[in-house]
Length: 120
Image 1 (cartoon, rainbow, N blue to C red):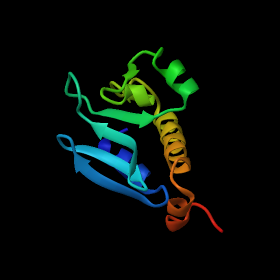
Image 2: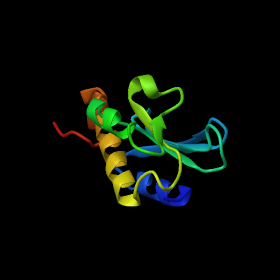
Image 3: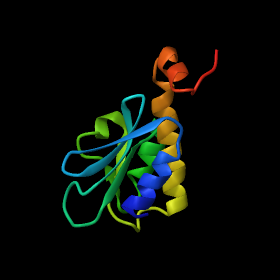
Image 4: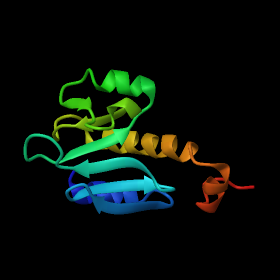
């Protein structure tokens, strides 16, 4: 998945925002909370995609080749894909949707309503 494809997919999710920070990383948020990042953190010239995971997904994914605990975010159960061989685009999209849902569910009900994620 290219950075443009990553950005296009993340923008398709309801009420997301994007900022460029941390050395030109594309950081995607819902309600001001980060759910996915595309960056060049760490060694190598490859772009790296990181996202929030459930506890179980985190444990499973960090055992896979080319997937590591995300720098600075591992304690919050984030993983980072080290290269384009780590996961298929379809799987990346699925995990990004799950990350989005995890973060959105942690927002206050008021914030979820403001963003159109919950109805009264």
